[in-house]
Length: 205
Image (cartoon, rainbow, N blue to C red; front, side, top):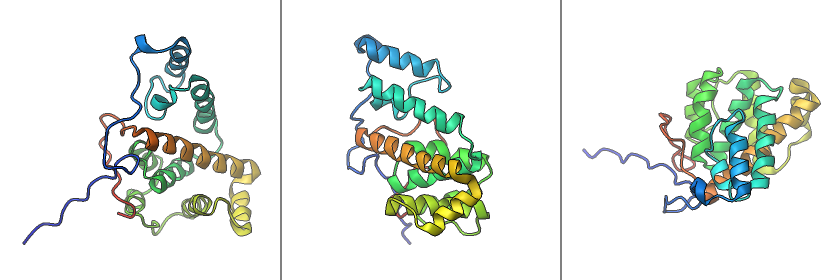
């Protein structure tokens, strides 16, 4: 009896090629602006140039501002870590982005999201049996990404749970990660080095 084929991971950027389009330039080949932007990232909380900051280094001023936005959302935000990491996972699954999925799926589990829920998301399914807040986050982020807005009931639910400021923060978090996932998909930025997290398969898996 033949064994079923093992699903192949989705190539970053949805093309047949896995060749990285915008790798990081050698430091000696960087412009003065690129070196300054790289040093700002290295000296900040991220400590290294990786993921979206590799292609963003092509536009140092944009990289700096996008980096500050990400810092505000990830390190200075008010949303619970579990909510934030689960939302990022939904974005990574919807955009088919390997880097953010392989980075944040383990962080979501560490923050308290059930591993079975992450497995369901990876397979393109709405996770069953989620805690109430977690189920809401999955539905809110999915609705926002697919409809480019949310209905009155979803908005009322969001503000009841997280307040108006938290609802804006959650929406901004989704928008930020959609943007950097798109940038990496276009650049074919590979997944994180040394990760043990399984890559995403075709959507739905």
